Length: 423
Ligand SMILES: *Cc1c(COP(=O)(O)O)cnc(C)c1O
Image 1 (cartoon, rainbow, N blue to C red):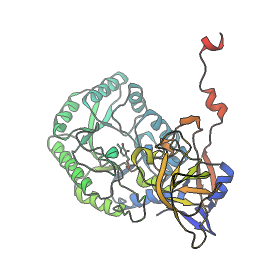
Image 2: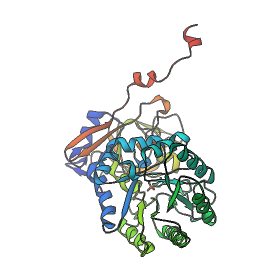
Image 3: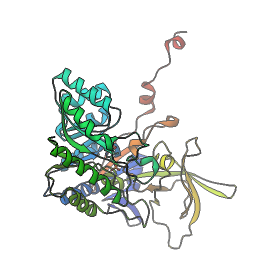
Image 4: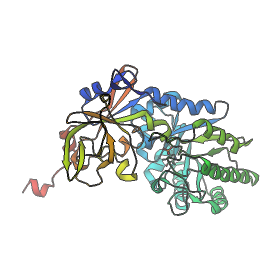
């Protein structure tokens, strides 16, 4: 369910014509829908209305300040994986005591930042991290509320690159060593082991593997309680998928919520969820202009002004995005198989191969659908292209929530060494 629809033959985001956005902002640009973001958050929040739940939006899916602020206004917490995300979440209005800090490589400075602000929870992923956290907390005279992220040895996720719950991945502590980790945590100064966490992957369409992982986590929580630990929280992670193609039909948030309730049973804990893609995925599109149509060796290349630096998912995960023309094609217009590519000097700068598309010509505009998650956050300035602009729409209003840097701004961050300039 999203708010991108054709009106009078032009693709709109809510009440705003995407052609108008392209004119105002230039292309490429991401456009997000406020109503869609809020709706996805509410569906999940409503499903747990009668439970003590913290929905910690996974900021890495879309870390635009405007997007985080929209969700914070709905009451969302944040799941962050860096000090930068933590600061952004707080700048966007997420209270520190609703921030979960995940990730395998938390630096000293990042740990200090979390302790200084009194975040909700550190999701700890290794013994050395636990020891570092204890030492720093002691130095600062703070207590660190922690959950261990367990690796439940369950396979899931839309692509091997986004599966995180198996022994070969770097994530979490070994499932069978969990008790020993909690014992160590209870011995260390300034550590409060108060939760158990898991996150097994992303773009999960069928949630049965989540059930297996959650059941392990819940049984661990029960066992730890029996052993005298004060376990108050269970964190089921994120990972629920969204449809990228027609016919792709992921399990719904309602089914997901039902399963979570079933697995929790009567365990009186606060439930923590870390949805990212589910909330931001189809709340955003990337709009782009056709630069050239190039025909060669029997192939048709539609060369866009968006590249893999703006939308990396196809190159990184062989991901599929629907590409729609901003104008509805003429009735009966014949589709032709084309390769949709960007301007970047890499062969992987290809968004689609042999994709049947209605007629496109130089100057036409297209939209990559379902680009709200892992789109702008993965963008770069590769080929010295300015970071892609982002806009947020609410009803008939559209605001630029990240402007494109100027070339002067980009160049100002760098310098030639003195030994050249003074020579
Ligand atoms: C990436 C991530 C999430 C969010 O995953 P989605 O598939 O976007 O829901 C949640 N928790 C952790 C620890 C993550 O790394």
